Length: 220
Ligand code: AMP
Image 1: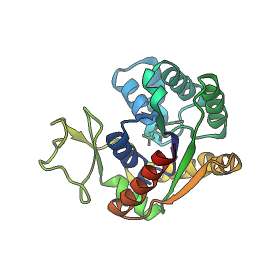
Image 2 (image 1 turned 135 degrees about the vertical axis):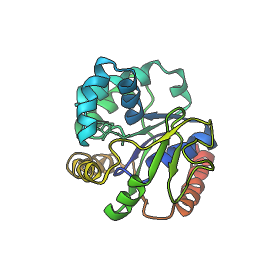
Image 3 (image 1 turned 60 degrees about the vertical axis):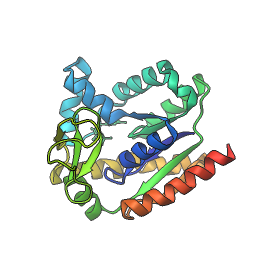
Image 4 (image 1 turned 180 degrees about the vertical axis):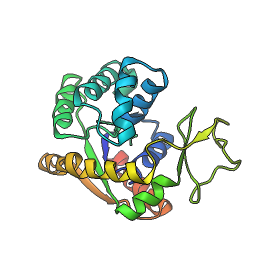
């Protein structure tokens, strides 16, 4: 299974990726996670990326494309499939991705497009909490951890991302509409786009998606 998860912030891409990783063991590649790791380690990339991320703006194409190219061409797990979460985010990134995947002879099977409305996105993202150690996702009302501030999976510390505040979320949404939405046409043109309604409650959404992915597995 080789796929891209596309959709606005808070549409459920990260939760879906967690679910797919658990069920099928495919490699989850999130440029957001990679950039946050660079920031944590205070690398040159991390320092540069920080100023963009904190505003809710996109990090320049060359930086993220280099990161993704390195990952896809060196991680042996790519052979068994991958899901890209948060990349590509611009048409230029999508074109670079086609070239990279062509070079490693692992083209995309399809692109899952999760749609969701702004009020729901704000509710999901302002309540979102993330484990600092393993990246597990929680939500203050929908999926609180068993013990406050502590990750159920690894016991790590749970925190709120600095860009998960209402103002930055609105910026991220504007950026998404301007830069990322045109990629819908790009992938539709390639016949690879699958639309899914991300407004559903996460339980219902998971059920629909798991049914779909099990069918896909059978057909491959
Ligand atoms: P995410 O974790 O996917 O929500 O990404 C968090 C932030 O990282 C975004 O708001 C961007 O600032 C940056 N980022 C992640 N992926 C990309 C990308 N493909 N292109 C540019 N910026 C990115």
